[in-house]
Each structure stands twice: as C-alpha cells, then as structure tokens.
Image (cartoon, rainbow, N blue to C red; front, side, top):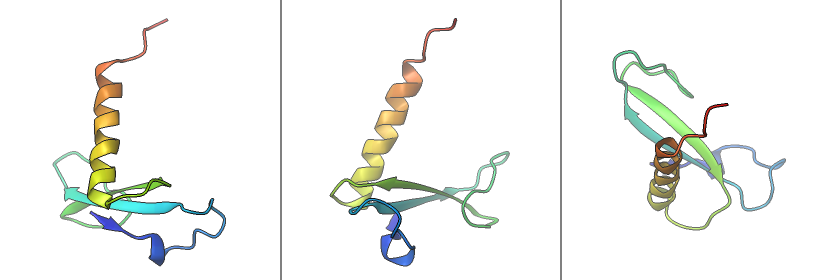
Length: 75
C-alpha cells in the first residue's frame, strides 16, 4: 500500500482527494494495470477519506466483497 497523492497532479480534483495504490502478485491470466510489471499488478483508487492508506483499502475491499455477495437481480 502506498499513497501517491503528492506524486500526481490533482489540481482539477476536489480538495482533499487522495490517490491510494496497492500492489499484488500477478496471477496467471490476470491483466497488468497502472504500471508495467512482470511480477505485480497495481490497483489505484481515489478517496477523500481521512485515515491510514491500509485501513482505507481494507474498507474499499470489504465494500466490493459485500457488493459481489449481493448481486443485482436479473431482468
């Protein structure tokens, strides 16, 4: 986990916007994202929440898990 807020231009974003990036092993069949790497995949998300980047990422992942466990009904 890393916060890259100070390394990117966020002048067009609302004040308080932060960029949090996580790195995970590149599993067979997964696509590269954000940065070219043969060993890792990088995911980034923007937030305006205060707090530690690790805690913010855990919160984001738990929301994804909840969304995936409660899919929208089919039409």
